[in-house]
Structure formats: C-alpha cells, structure tokens
Image 1: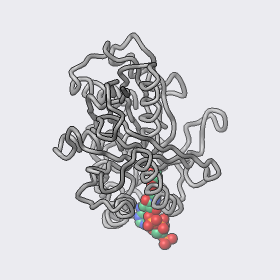
Image 2 (image 1 turned 180 degrees about the vertical axis):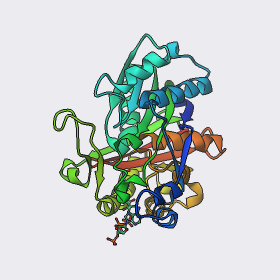
Image 3 (image 1 turned 90 degrees about the vertical axis):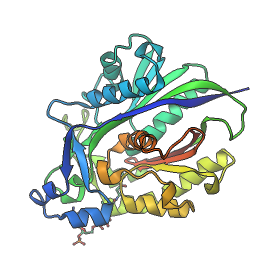
Image 4 (image 1 turned 45 degrees about the vertical axis):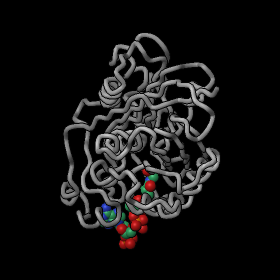
Length: 324
Ligand code: UT7
C-alpha cells in the first residue's frame, strides 16, 4: 500500500481593492494596451493599508477548511509559501496558525519566490509520506504591492496581492498513476542567476524591505525553456506524458509564457487554467489562487490530472503532478 497526499479542500482570498491597468497610466509611462498585449494582465488586487500577508493567508485558510469540512484543530501543520511575510520573523505561517485558532501542530514558511507554492507542495508531500503529518494546509500568500517601485514601469504593472490554500490529507493509494494525490515533483534552483530577479533590500544588507528588481526579458527567456523542461521531468517521474494532462495550472506571470509552455507540452490552451488577467502576478499565491478559481469555475474536477509549474527569483523552478 502507498500513502498519497490528496487534496481535501481548497480556498482563496483576494483583497477588495481592484486596480485596473488604467491606474498605472497616470503614474508611469505605460498604457493599458501595452500591459494587456505584453502580459495578458487587465487588473490586479492590492491589499488595504494594514492588511497583511497573514491576514490574506488566514482568510484563504478558513475557506479551504470550510471546503474540506474540517476545523483548525484537525490540522497537523501549516506551510506558507511567501516572499512578503508580515515581519522578518516569526513566520507568516505561525501568524496564520494563531489567526485561525490552531494551537497544536507546527507551522513554517517556505521562500522560493514565485516557485514557492510548488516547493511548499513538494515539502508537504514529503512530510505526509514520511508520516510526520496527516493533514497539512499549504498556503501561498503575498502582498507584492508592498515591495514594488511605483516609479519603475517595467515591474510595477506586473504584480498583485492575494492568497490561496490547499488542504492535503494522507490517504491510501495503490502506487499507480491512477491514484488521487501528489504523484511526482521536480524541483530546481540555480543561484548564479540572482541578479535577474531580486529585491534590493533585506535584514542583513540594508535593514529595509527593499524593492523588486527584474530583468524581465531575461527571466522570460529562462521561463519559456525551464517550465516545459520541469513539467516534462515531473510527468516522466509519474510515468505520464502531456497527453495525459487534464489541466495545467501554471504560475500566472505572463500569458505569453503560459501559452508558450502549454505549446511545448503539446497541451491546448483549453486545458490551461488562466487567471493572470484578473490577478496579475501574485508570486507564490498564483497557483493555489488559480486552483481554487479553476475549481469554482467547474474546470477542475475530482480525478483530473493536474500539472502545476512555476519559476521565480533564485532562479528557482519546479513542477508537481497530482490527481485532484
Ligand atoms: O513571476 C516571476 C517570473 N517573472 C516573470 O515570469 C516575468 C517574465 N518577463 C515578462 O513577463 C516580460 O519580459 C515583461 C512583461 C516583463 C516585459 O515584456 P517584454 O516583451 O520582455 O519587454 P522588454 O522587457 O523586452 O521591453 C520592451 C520595451 C522596452 O522599451 P525599449 O527599450 O524597447 O524602448 C521597455 O522599456 O517595452 C518597454 N516597457 C514598457 N512600455 C510600456 C517595459 N515595461 C513597460 C510598460 N509600459 N509597463
């Protein structure tokens, strides 16, 4: 018998304030047309003053628990993938833990920038397979609006705030790719690409939070190549191919990257969950947000084979194959 980490519930939360592309026309030299045509983004949500990453994460967590029909006391662990925690420490995960009233178990953050949720899913899977935990809430939560340089048109138009949560639970499987749950993961990093995407501040350098800096076209080039590579590697490990995929749930950074990756995987765009038009790039939150929205839309159903892939600062990139 094989243990599998199976999705039992999912939920998301987006801050109330919706920011259309037109708002940036007044701030920097850009146009709605440029943003739409180069990225697919039409709008994004920004957190209210005083609304933090753990606030967004706790709201998504509460919705995922309700979807699963469980309460905070049923959880063994919380993992939050984020690069924009409320404070340098403690972790956003322990803050979510307190906000949802969970007093048992353990909680920690994973920081792999936009690939954070994929890394968190793989870690949660390993904890479940090793018997460390039976139920883990895996959250992606970000307030990237707080680290944007609103005078830099090449980055400030791209990002948004939000949170998504997926509740994983240990279940018996047969050991075949017909099982529900996480079937394979592929994780990669190459720190020599640090300067392509980074934040120019931090506790041990400037003592400030800093602002996001990106050489967008360089990251774009790596994304198109590495995302299809890692998705294929994860599918290979599961003994599956692109033809078996019901839904790609990609990191939502740029519609052109999403479609180029789907094309390389020979999966038609009708089988890709796309939310970038409404959310912008929410970094580690983008995949669980897209999973939750995809389920709400009736796209993702029990038994569907999902491939999720992401790349971000580091560079770090990876993919997870799971049957919903
Ligand atoms: O989630 C983490 C991973 N991040 C990503 O996946 C992002 C990857 N990169 C991208 O999505 C794209 O590279 C961008 C959307 C960031 C940029 O698109 P691009 O087609 O690669 O454009 P570019 O950077 O090559 O810039 C083309 C032109 C430049 O002008 P010149 O030098 O040709 O005169 C930019 O200055 O577009 C200009 N530009 C803008 N123009 C109007 C850059 N940003 C803007 C803007 N409005 N907001």
